[in-house]
Length: 218
Image (tube, rainbow, N blue to C red; front, side, top):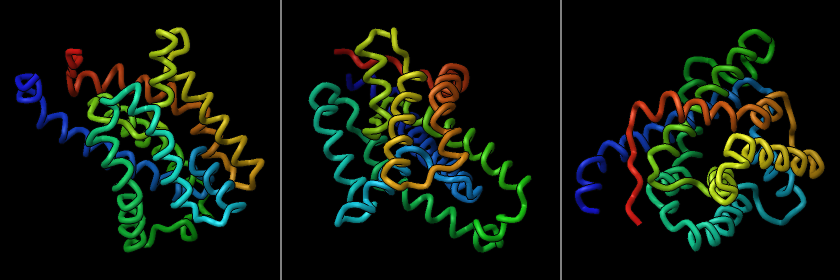
């Protein structure tokens, strides 16, 4: 085990952090497009509007609750990747939004330029998916929501693969968000239908080549 971490530990850490940063850049692109939020955020925004707690507090509670069964059955899922995602992703997005505002790129500024908004949507989606694929492939811990699709894939022994499990959970979140009053836009629908397949493609064809991650001995 010590030899395993000695050989690939530093590389995995670097790619894990890089993956979450890339993920944050992708979310920034989606937000700047003005076409709505991702399904998970959409659901939490809608639900929090009916509760005496903020969006951030609700999402934190959900993450803790989701992590309880995940830690029990998949203890290795709780690691640097999960912690960095949970604690830093929001700040990364805020920082990226601030940097963009310094050069005049804001949601309001691009609102009248449909071509730019579509470009931000498409680029944001691809960057978002690549970030998810990279940090998940490093296998140093996965945020609760991202782990659900992997659990379904593992428990069904691949009969219901990650890409379709992710589509299912995203669609469920989108429906709950819509019913509860969350903002459902083109980005919400696009992310719901395409995140799973695109993340799977990036993991198979790019992330796997950037970093070979052997299975940890049981």
